[in-house]
Image (cartoon, rainbow over all chains, first blue to last red):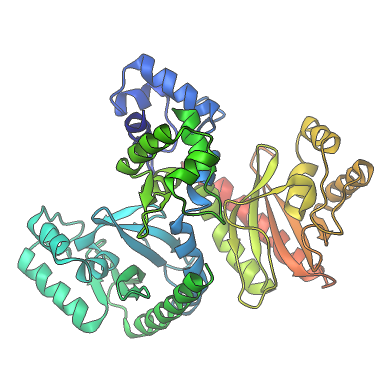
Length: 244
Length: 244
């Protein structure tokens, strides 16, 4: 049942928020009768819901249960005041990402009305090699994970994405030396991602804090704001641990 | 299985984020062997995780699957720019709540470093009769739900909570007449909640937008900021529907 539940939940994405039971069954590779039975059971439990058109969507109750005790929420709440200061100073999209199952998972994204396009979403993912946040997370990750990513398939998301393993290894060295990642045109041609690490009390990287600037914009102001915010989040993380 | 999964998830709360398998089994009323088997299955699927001490917590993967396609996230993302403006202007906790299973469920809370205490949490709930957000949601809800709440048990959270059905009915009339709720000392003695409705394109109330002020503070400035923000969210909701 757990496996089928996960397969059903995986059919819902940021761009596919409502589906018929038949669509869910097909995409989750479940026989029609099983799909109907399980979806009905999940709707009764509130984990899925029916919308006004009778289509199925992820339930508010599931969001509540998955969120209220989650460490995603705690990390995000601890980071929010500092993120808001970055956003107010830089006036561009500001994001918090963690390393999850070999990808960068975005826990929060504050948008600015005046800011340009931005592909990332809350609870969305990007490959580690292809975004400034991912590069920060990868640069400070275990050597095994770095080797896996460098040996894996490197697909260009935009003209600037590094898809050569040797280039990428040099880039990771650069990130560790400078303590930040600048990724011009890696995810979108018109944008430059800038990210810094947020360290936990144990000295390991807990998250990457980033902004998305227009391509060609000066990065120094953003880096100063990000570096200060990262120190603030690190202090708040230590206080958060001590108060629990 | 779905019922047991929900029972297990319900044992995790904002103040109980990590538990042993034995604690989960006891609180979910499951035999020890079943608890071990199901928790192991959920950990393998990533819906639960083990922390450094071997205790169980809600998994990042469950948060991701429950969030990425949820209408909680969409409503919250649409409302965020307006909420940030309220918070910048009022410099107090700013919150977004919806009606969910007869309670006010908080989708977002922006805190201000200088602001006072605040009992609400993201993905937390409050009774409809006991908070300014809840009063707004209840005042515009179906008559049946209003009757249910007024006939139900009314428990005081603080000295100011209205626990008399006739007082509460008058308060709901006031909220509809004024178009906002002011709740001094309803949730906490030292705080006054102030909330306004956010209407959907169909004319029904989609959410309540609120701030928490120190008790006795003037409410007019906050109400102006909230009313403007509600109009802005309503416009953004219409644009959001049209773009999907």
